[in-house]
Image (cartoon, rainbow, N blue to C red):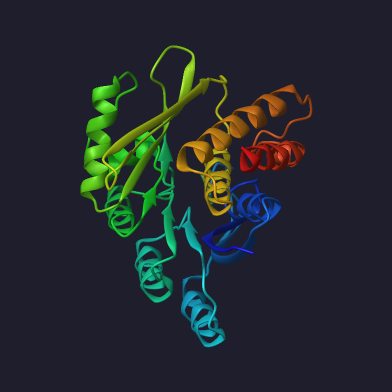
Length: 281
Ligand code: PXL
């Protein structure tokens, strides 16, 4: 069985980061090892929340793992929290990466042209250095703009996206994938550039008109889960984009939906069957 390490916070209530990555990647048949960077009572879109930083636990935990000789097929990082934590995570990459370990970074820090409340521009620049150590990065347009010092635009064309991808590759990542890219009216999806193959790829599906928390984490978790199941990048992004859109639709249909996250628990069975179908193809 493949084994992924995911490094991000635990938001106890809120359906994001580890409370999405752990159930989703496990359901995709992959052992999911977690390294929590902080414990929050809720995610940071609630009016108030508690935070207990766990930075001082990262080294003792990973030192123990080194003694156990554990290896990871992939390391997937999401919301991290502080600049110091990013430095710690870079060391963890150095300690655990061998030639078969895929480093997958989702530099979670903002959306819709703004950084989340806990972050500033220095944090964004630090996150850019983490992206520089990755095989694959999956920022949204906001995060990409903050990391590359690019003006954020609500309206753009493919040239703007390609320029952003080039700047992301300049940070040092081998493959850069922008999420939340809308290349035509009513559509949304991803566009990426694989610098080793010199190839662009993109996938667009119907835009669901709702902004939901945790959907970026869902997208990233499904993508890395699909890759570790042997799917191609194109298949993985299609599965992740379609599944995320379906989950938002199902959530919108639920009259008792929570405001703070999506009903991915309802759609996990269709993720698993969709994955199995793609593996057979
Ligand atoms: O879904 C990303 C995320 C993860 N963790 C925490 C967050 C957010 C987004 O706001 O606040 C704590």
